[in-house]
Image (cartoon, rainbow, N blue to C red; front, side, top):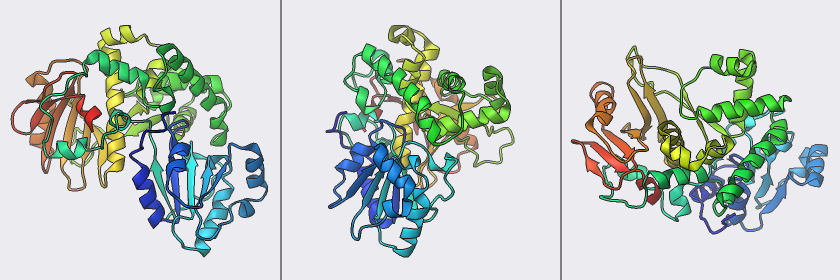
Length: 410
């Protein structure tokens, strides 16, 4: 892993530890949670990993003794989902001692989905998501894209991010381990990564045992990243009952492999859709697990569009989670008006964002953004088409074609 990359979430984790008794740093395996926790300036921290079989057996045998709190010390527990019996013990400890920063937990599975978890530590614990790396994070930039977009502060020009470059970035993805890999080694890593998750980590949160079917479901979902689908379609395709298909989708979501983006619903407009959109949490996972060829994907508008939109989703999701009060959603209605992403800040101001993998933008690309601004937006609204060109071009007041490279700058 590139250990010199400063993670954007690091100050947020430290701030949370100063205010909360328990902090849970969650995210997919190999996103860098353990490395981030190791970089935190926490004097005298007690670090324990449940990937160590001896420590895991000790935790299961005596949860209260294992989780005991050492005064004025933060205990860092890696892979907490492996020993959910520790959570009631931690709850008992922090209920008796309200000191801040007692525990930093890390986990590769959402504890709300773990079948053995009986206590969520509600009110005592803050959960912070660590995603795969953003491009600007890799480049050592600050995450200021959203702040600047809300005030229409866009760079005049950004070179070096044509369609081919963007597809290459999407193929690489943002897992720290793969940054320096060749294409061949990267494909092998992604295949092994998915197999390891489905063979090992899935057992920590669910009783699913049909791992071949689960892998088929994961592949089906990857192929539909950024697309709309129903549980009925997933069930029919995988020959599962609807409840079982929902269970499989929940398990893959709990491993932070797929994200559900809600529909924007702050309207009484009768035709507005309510269906969520699902995205793979890393574009590299899509490209490599589907065994796509980079040259062919670049020439295929559907594949390149899916990859770049998935890449943008991760970039926006990271920034929304960093910002206080920012929410990410999408819009679609029965008249087939669709906006890829809507970002709403704490003041109720909205960014409407369309994504194009191509290098040209026309006035027609803003039609749905204009309609939304005129009919549904109740406050300030900025409409953006992110595209694979190099110049920021205004298309009337509050509407801009903006290079996708702006995300790499911040």
